Length: 357
Image (cartoon, rainbow, N blue to C red; front, side, top):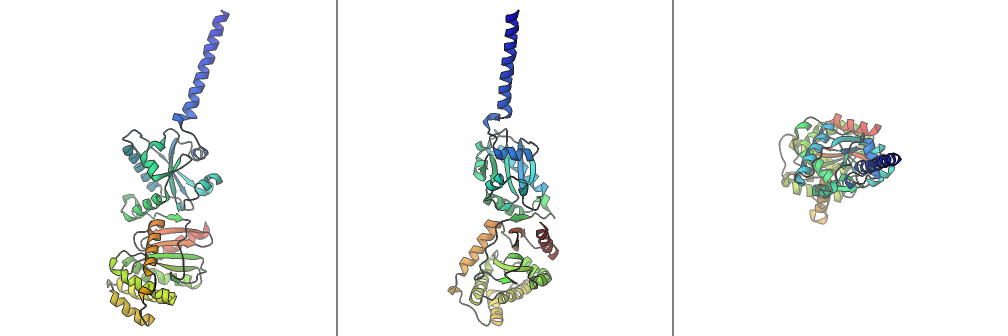
């Protein structure tokens, strides 16, 4: 009897040990996936979700509809890319950047565009999916959309009529300040203004004209009291205005006088606002009246300036259409990217928001 009892006890102990081992490998190391400090932190903040699409915002909470759409699209793309061997549904998890540990913020240090978005799974090895490896960076098994992919995603959202986004503003925050070289770039207002409004514009852009005619007059008091400075950047979307921009850039580089450029654009946009699109000859005539002469465009590196502005707009901020804006808070070192015409109330609301964050 004693031997039988010992045998039963041994069997029970062995069963408990085997069960414990299986439970450990199933829950702690599922399918060989290592739960890194990053995943542990994110999982806790995402209600212990096993599969999460994480949107990390800086100051402006993201649009939930947008990120649910992105999450669903990514799930479908992963299934298709893996020939349906990886079928995964992500739950959306929205986190403030400020609430992250200093270690995770350091790991995400190269990302300057917000919301940052990424995915993780405690059950599925996402590194086996080619799409994930191509478009995401691995931050301790948290797969974060590469910076250029993030910007391209927002550019797509802005450029196409995504149904759920009708009449909804999608704000993109940036910690990357646009380049400001006063030898190349006109500034309307004080260089010491608290806020810079960088505008990427095209001389034939009707909505740029609308901004100059309808919005800029309302901002002039803020420009005069050094609250706002308007910084003028080039983004040519109509090939017909290439020479116009070349002459405007050369005029500024020769004169270093932003007032001349301001007057020129007001004259040009005054016509565009009324559906009259000035030719290069028309602009040169205006230039003679405003500046007194026509600068030699071959004397200055105007093409480089125009190309640098366009590259910055497109690849740093996803601005491919005009007008595009970066409203920059000089003291806090953060900006908000806006694409398309904005009313004066919209511009001032962004500035007020930056003031209180």
